Image 1 (cartoon, rainbow, N blue to C red):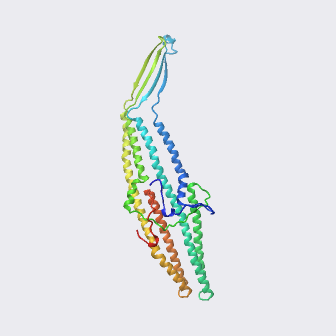
Image 2 (image 1 turned 90 degrees about the vertical axis):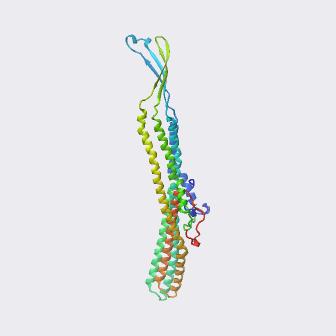
Image 3 (image 1 turned 120 degrees about the vertical axis):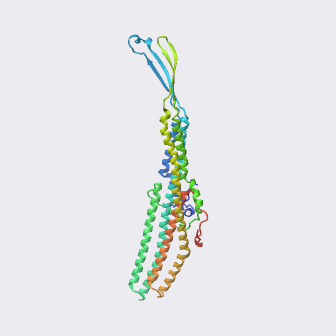
Length: 425
């Protein structure tokens, strides 16, 4: 499905919202796709290239020109040839009769180049849309990192309050309070860093369509929701339909057209000329004509024929090599996606809930004086680290998903894995 790339499908499920009543425009992934599709210079350049190729087709459709000529003989001579009676005037029309199918081969080559441009444009478009999805994902990542930082800040604020209360009660030294405040400051730094990353990611995304002062915000998205993929065998079958391999079919037609054009050069063209000659002395006229044909055309065409044949054969090897490369990339990316998906699900189902309960229990125990601050703070850090690990795994899975969709040209938007069930692929 080349005409639409739906990368990070679950990120694009939120409805497209206008900026009515809001300070910033709400930008969906599909809206970002549309902006790049309409305005990116690389895609517009391909449209101009098509105009160039169409002009080449028009030029290839031209027949050899007919040349009109005039020849004056025996004029301005001396002796017997000094008078007007010796003058001979010949008017001629001349051209070349193409043989061997040169005209059709030339047109076929020009037309195949035009047809191949459509596949090239689609391949370029998929690459650009994949880049849009990756930059959009960077904004999503910055938002999610900010949410984790805010959660960590709330935890650390409770720690500071509890440490202050115990310090006032004389149950713990001032160093505990200062350590808790330092941990809070570090969490606030993480939040500030995520906000700065969001600004940079927004600018990076908007640069794809040339916007210099972006003011939009992206819609709410959940990178932890990962769709279920087809098995690897089904995905690998889709590779034959991708633009990266489909272009080889068009390139083969181009090279075969070049081969046919080279073979047509082995048939010599006929040069012809007809005309009328007038004899001034007798005031008579006569028809004249001639035919000419170059010798050795086949021998001169043989190097070009061998070269064109070698190019056709080499294309098959190039396609095989590209197919192996794409297959290897798909295998690695598919495995990376499943591994990251499993990590996200297990962290969601087993690790994070237990750490959350442990952190809550540690808070109660600390306030009751049953454990030290370090034990509570360590559980808070582990909970935050687990959420960051889950987010990193989800982002890795989303990047792998984008690459899989770029390779196959297919969206995966159905049957998302339910996070709360913790299913494994």
